[in-house]
Amino acid sequence: GNSVTQMEGPVTLSEEAFLTINCTYTATGYPSLFWYVQYPGEGLQLLLKATKADDKGSNKGFEATYRKETTSFHLEKGSVQVSDSAVYFCALDSNSGYALNFGKGTSLLVTP
Amino acid sequence: KAGVTQTPRYLIKTRGQQVTLSCSPISGHRSVSWYQQTPGQGLQFLFEYFSETQRNKGNFPGRFSGRQFSNSRSEMNVSTLELGDSALYLCASSLNPAGDTDTQYFGPGTRLTVL
Image (cartoon, rainbow over all chains, first blue to last red; front, side, top):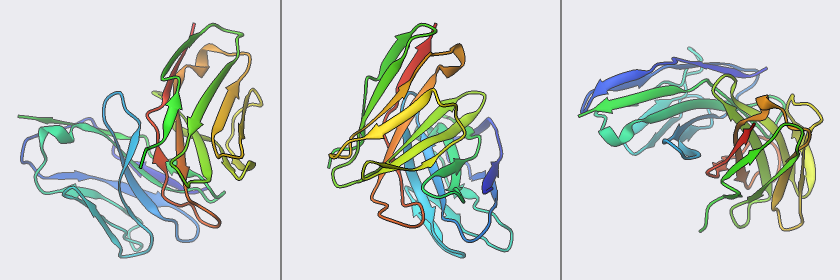
């Protein structure tokens, strides 16, 4: 079935550093792709999404491009802040419908 | 617009008991999904309801069940609790009238601890 693989981390960066979190997917058809973020003690928040090839999702300085040729949806941010410290999940439509399949999550710690 | 709400936020039960968790979706959303989050298995899909009908179910034993009411609120029930059921249970709602998965909006979760 549809699945995603993401780097597990933890990733530790200094404030204002460049961030990349890799996510690759395996899927039949053309699933929508998502990045969710989970802050400590909270549920998941949608960060960005892309619904078709070459779409770029963006929000709060984060970006990800749906790359069909490399089956990837890497998350990037040019300059991270301490407040970006969280766990980031890559996800895609389940091929069984009406569900998301998530990666294992990547923990990000940004230090001042 | 109010977000997805889940009650209770924290719950402690003992093995063999049963538990019911509640989820109120965003106003106007008719699809409600449930996920289990554990450190070992990550986020796993439990089931999804739309207009009181279960449309999809994940790979969980029959001890896990759910339902949806006419106002789109949903409950999930776990019977005969096991230690391994300790987890964060997340509810998500979406518009999702048909077809592919629509954007899901998550609640804060219910933290269940089984002793």
